[in-house]
Amino acid sequence: MTGPLPRPDSRLPGRTGPARTVIIAAHGPDRGTADPTRRLARVLAGRLLWQDPQTDWRVRPAFLRGDGPDLFPDVLAALPAGTDVTILPHFAAGGAFTRRIIPARLTESGSHLTVSLLPPLGTDPAVRGEIAATLAAHPGSDLLLVGHGSADGTPSPLLPLAESFRQNGRRAAAVFIETAPALPEWRHCGLGPEITVIALFAGFGRHVRHDLPSAFGLPPDSLRHGGSYDIPGHRLHVAFPLTDAAIMARIAAARLTAA
Image 1 (spheres, rainbow, N blue to C red):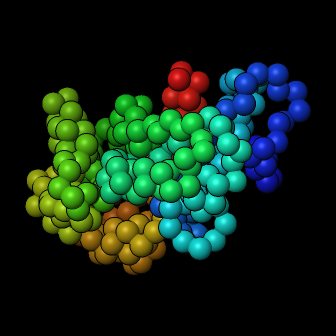
Image 2 (image 1 turned 90 degrees about the horizontal axis):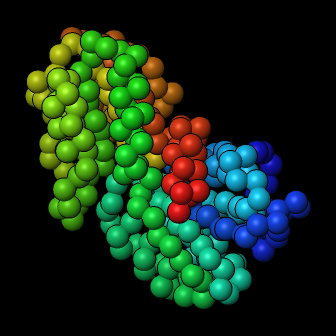
């Protein structure tokens, strides 16, 4: 599905079932962080139309920071009173945005709505299956999960995720931007010469453009398209599953149509 998203108060022709509004909430604000969420909204709208053609699905992106269009409070305020809204956070895990900022914005700008707040998309169990599929393409490689980490001290789900792969015989570790074990210390994780790097970020912001390549001794903004890279002592296979609109739309649609 391409082109502009429908107005939040418009009914698409041919839809006889109930209307369901889905807001994909993401960080923003720059283009690198917003574009994957906008693509996800378009692809998810098309997938829902195909999976559940009777329901009048209305899918919109909304951003928690920035000064451009589709800011989260503005999207909420534009919806008619009483609208049933499902909020789908486009984040890798729970943190300050999903536990504090989104609920606060809902209180400020969404009190006229009936809201269901789903867990972050990156925590869906199907994401593990996507990681396993990526590993299957590189059967001899170890696994390095890279996430942001939560400054409030909440344990990251990436740690038990790495442990689950270790229990299946794969050497695996998790490192973080904000917390320990830190991304620049990845060489101390005991991984072998071939590593599949799964970077769990929902956009291509500064962490992907600068922090990630810097940790591997690569030029800025050299990793956003994924692929394989040779660095001293290692061959890296890099993937960003949360920015893949087709993968995330499939996972999100399964969650939404099961609700």
